[in-house]
Amino acid sequence: MAIDQKQKLRLQAGFSMVEMLIYLALLASVTIFLVNGISAITKSYADIRLAKAVSTSASAALQRIIHETRQASSIDLSGSTFGANPGVLRLVDTDSSGATTTVAFTVVNGVLRVSRGGVDEGPLTLSGASVTNFTLALLQNSISNAVRLTLTIQSSFGVKTRTETFYTTAVTRNM
Image (tube, rainbow, N blue to C red; front, side, top):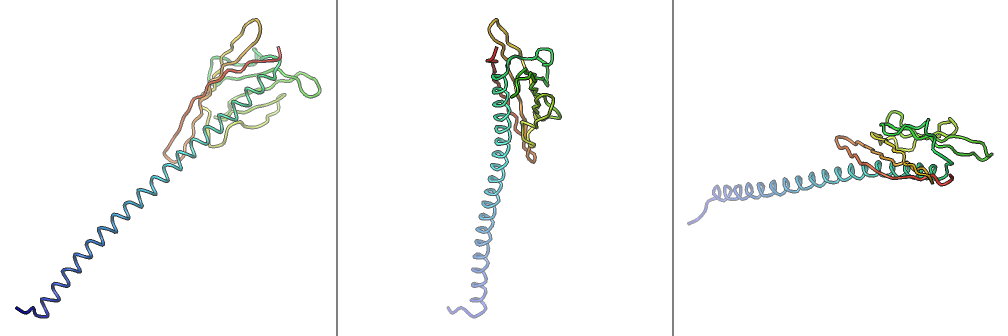
């Protein structure tokens, strides 16, 4: 039985159609794989960016507060706000000339700021992070004063948001 020319062309066209469908399926699979990979990378980047903003802000703020509290001669009880959010921490210190001055930590529009002698020294948190809770508790005994801090920082990137709460206690050393 001989296959005529028309039948050969139909068979070849049929194989070409099957080959084309296989190639399209492979192309679709690779495309889906690439899109999922890019999506995962984007999500990871957002997670890393949020974690960095929160942890860097918290680290800088808490280190500065602990350092200033340890160096302070006392806590200004009348100028500080304890048990409220946002709290205010005012420390009594001496400047380089020996004069008494105050160091204040306040939250303004979600940004933790520090001022010395009434002059704003700038923010302690990054612009991409917002302080949602800055609560202070005074701990006193006959030997020293301490402040227990609760600091909650939130950062958003696109639709993702990360919020973390940090706790520490700082003791005045120069009593």
